[in-house]
Length: 564
Image 1 (tube, rainbow, N blue to C red):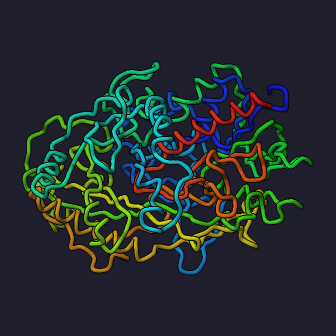
Image 2: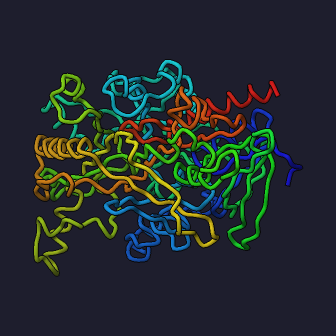
Image 3: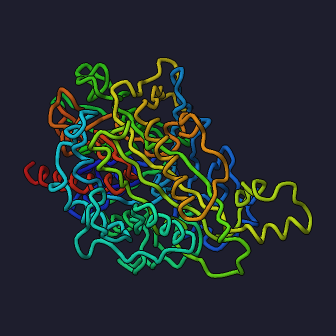
């Protein structure tokens, strides 16, 4: 191990922690990276060419592998027996964790959309939640850097909800597949846009990474580095500087403050041996994932911070958000009985449906104030256990030779549309330290009290109807009737795995936990760089914004270190 104290201690190795390690080591800082999970090498461990037919349960999900046997997430999921969490009555919140080097960057949908200025200044627009402490004009250069670093394919359609990227930021998008062209035709009939998705997969080689050649699902990981994962894109470059020290199985649980009020270092335990350790540094960055970083702040109590570091404003643990989510399946007779054909592509959407109803929303014609987008899934990909989930809706009671004939007829004719919408940050949606519950290592656990409001339910009702309209306009038919109550369609909070908030950034220390760079008010060398700093969430996957925020924060930290 390099000599202590390090210049920077980074907790977490995913989108935030991995980006910080990348940026700071390249700037000359000696970084110690603490990762709670095990080491992970996508080049060696990714089952790129193994068929789902030979996987246990045909790659169906199980409690310990909810996304199937081949999913990249190891030692993780919504249910970790050694790491329980509590929920308040009436709360169904689900907390997904990935205990591995790279965290959730090994498993995510890789939708990489920029927040627009109206996303960053939503409170100024409608009076709900809080504004970000900067505008899009100030933040956009960091999006430029993030897109070039991550590798994002997409286009610039010139839409108000999707800011255009400067030349050289985006890679060419793959062509739409047959089922996506159907939805595009439906969009034209409805007068609604269907455009190239912005997805963190490269279609041209960059920085020693190979372009995607459509081998296997992205959620397995990628041994050639075509999709964005911290262990393939960020950490190798940081290691090459010789200034990165990585400690895995290191469960960080407390930040220690010195007498001068600055962070002195981090206490962690080895999850294999239960041995406690301390590592010192000139600065501490929390990028452990939003809820884990909030838990660590709560558990760092002292005379100066009796309720936890950052709790003095009352906003620590408050304003928790996740994306809204619901699905509608359609079956398309046009896709029945087709001969085998090459419909390959990225195992993620090539196109998506951006939020189109700004005029009605701004005019007050909709019963909700924040938008959503729609994602498309379908095609003739390799069959798995859930391929024929809806087979009985088109061919009930089939068996034997007829079952095989019907399978050939209907395979590839089902398309799923999925809502991803914005949840408004509310003070009452919060996490706290549970007074009793502890994890297997004795660290106090979190208690969630997070629920949807009428805003999210009205939004979901609108999204359900919109998805049905797209399917019908494209010539398809609904697999099942829409639920009459949107509460029966919307997925529980946490299910989309976009949880953010809890240590929000802001311009006023009385109403926020950090400043615009993620620095904790009152602790000048302690930063939060993950999704916990989000004052609002937009309807867009948060990962690209986390990378951009971290790049900006690390630039600020470098300037601060140069000044001592």
